[in-house]
Amino acid sequence: MILVYVLLGLVVLAGIYFAFLRKKPEELPAAPLAKGELPAAKGEAKAKSEPPAKAEPAAKAKAEAPAKAEPKAKSEPPAKAEPTAKAKPEAPAAHEAKPVSKKDVAGLRKGLTATRGGFIARLKALFVGKKEIDPAILEQMEEIMLSSDIGVKTTQSILGRLRDRLEKNELGDEDAVWAALRAEALAILGIGGGALQTSGKPTVVLMVGVNGVGKTTTIGKLATRAKDDGKKVMLAAGDTFRAAAVQQLEVWGKRVGADVVKGKEGADPGAVAFDATTKAKEAGVDFLFVDTAGRLHTKAPLMDEIKKVRKTIAKALDGAPHETLLVLDATTGQNALTQAALFKDALDLTGLVLTKLDGTAKGGIVLGICDELKVPVRYVGLGERAEDLREFHAEEFVEALFGRDEGDVAAA
Image (cartoon, rainbow, N blue to C red; front, side, top):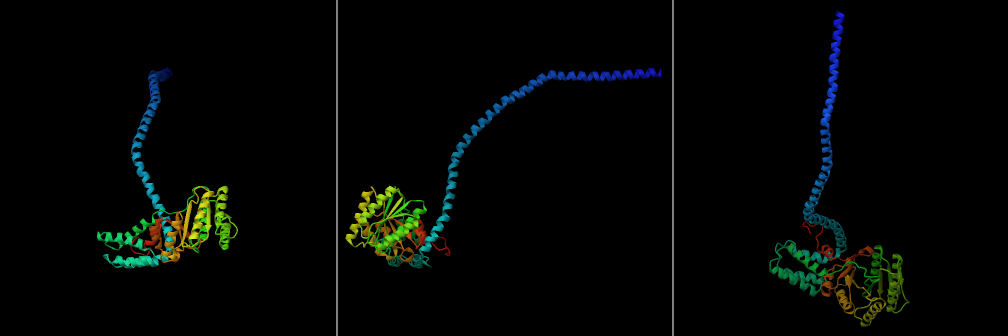
């Protein structure tokens, strides 16, 4: 009996177990019910997958729409913001230029030490310790300016304008007077200047001046500068009167790698200039520098000769010479002004080169020449080396001449 009960128990257990297993498959087909829901689920998945596919375009469309909207939003503000963004880089660019300018001014100031220690130092001494500017001080200024070879006409015109400003109480202290002097100098010197520019092949530069001012040396220095800038240069030995001048020019020619066109001793300078211009044109050089004999500005026959040289060059090349530079020795003071006036009457001067400016305390002559003749200074010589021939820029020159030394308490 016990065995029967055991067997019956096992059957019951098997039935329960079987019933349990039957439910599992039923639940598993219930999963197909879930399958029946799966179609919906798949449909949902499709709905999810398709909408996403559609949503993605939509999202893209939305993304594109904002992207398009953003450019519009950005294109309007940035369009307004761009000027300020561009304006900001410009300011740094100006600031970046200052260190170079300061360096140039420092070198120029060093070269003008003699003038700053003479003319400028004497002017400064008038204002030291003065809290108020007395109109009588203008008379003392006049004496200093005239003795510094600024010239009567220029001195009177500058002091006349300062006197008017004093009467209007616009120059109440030393700084105001000094600033006014700087402004006057800048107005006079700012008529032009700067380095030579090529205006064709070749650009013909005729150099003129009296004896001993440094024409040939100046040509050598200009040729050196041009070669350093990658320009092709040719030299013309138009000073046929002085054999040493031809030899000197040949030395410069070898130094800078430039051909030198010359004639026989005593040859017609016009013929040499014509030949050189023709050869320069054929060779396609950038600059032709034509040297000429020194001539006294008071000698009419010699001035007539230089006029003929100029006309001869024009026959060889239409529009030449493109530049006619008068070389002046700054140490000669008022005599340099007289020379410049007579050369200007004879020739169409395009610029001046002031040599030996480092050796004179009367650098104020620059003001007188520019004011009276209205001919710009192109270069100033501040030493013997080629790099000591410096391009003339009015702002730098005025700052170097009138600016305060680094040791001064007040800022320039």
